[in-house]
Image (cartoon, rainbow, N blue to C red; front, side, top):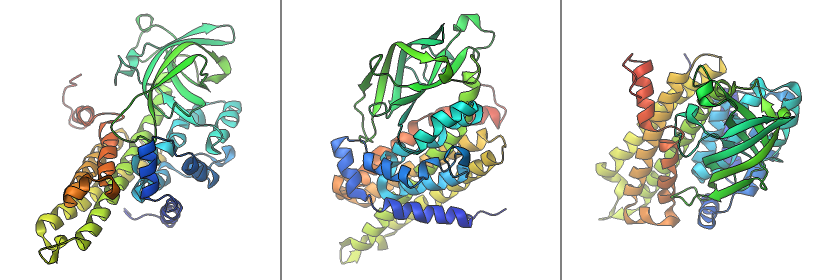
Amino acid sequence: MDFTLTDDQRRIREAVLEHCARFPDEYWLRRDREGVFPHDFHASMAESGWLGVAMPEDVGGAGLGIAEAAVMMQAVAESGGGMAAASSVHGPVFSMQPVNLFGTGEQRRRMIPPVLAGDHRICFAVTEPDAGLDTTRLRTRAERRDGGYLVNGEKIWISVAQVADKMMLLARTTPLDRVERRTDGLSLFFTDLDRSKTEVRKIDKMGRHAVDSNMLFLTDLWVPEEDRIGAEGDGFELILHGLNPERILLAAEAVGLGRAAVHRAARYANERVVFDRPIGMNQGIAHPLAKCWAQLEAANLMVMKAAAMFDKGLDCGVEANAGKYLAAEAGFEACHTAMLTLGGMGYAQEYHVERYLREILIPRTAPVSPHMILNFLSEKVLGLPRSY
């Protein structure tokens, strides 16, 4: 076993950190205050080819794996951009996997390259107000018509919908009471976000103001048949192929943001002098930060294990979920400890750790709560009865 990054992965990390240095903490603080999408950052990442890191070369990608994507996204968050920077670019990395794996040749050529080039921005329209994590209970309906489908329904917590022109949409094509299995009858589409048929209502939220979250109200949205990915009714199975990469990438981002917080706090602890000595000399400051570093690095090992397993085609559901849980908890502890290290200045926006703390709550909560991960692990690993 080798727990070190490969030469290629180290080069990716160094290149992304160098690239992101062009967008310092002050840039992200301005975007957070203004609530403006980081168009220039997104464009720069697309122009440099980073959006296609895990996509095949025949559609304009780099042909690398989720492990390399995790290294990249971790560096993006660690640069100080946090979840705002990561959320603005990580969609193309995992959201297009169903198209890559199950789309026709024509769909792959038509749909993927514009996303990787930054010409199309995408949102991932799956979750609904009344379904939560019970995806089989989705009520958004896609009714068959000649040449396509009419879609009606609601979606919630859809990121980037304010600026997106494409969406990955999961909708029910067969009513729940007419299917043998609850997972049947859902279909996956990659289609235009037609704003004449879609109301996009922004959700004001605690953090990550630069990347919007929204409710979508779909009314007679026309989706041509050629925009359906895979067979009708197979959408649930197809969407599962994007869930483990999503958990891995979010976990890597949580580690990166936690590292940013610890590094900033350690620098402050070296510089801040109280009672004629730097506060970092006090074990009450030093030990919590050291503990956070250890927890982050341990979590990162599980995250990279999950990524390596995914790239080898192995079942990594347990590792991906465990990595997401561990990284999010360690990242939260790191950001909270950093804020405490700075004392009163930790509450001031100009020192950035309060922004880190607000943003780390995203991977801690979404796309699946820590409690549901523990439910999953207790059932799949320990063989305990299912509790939901």
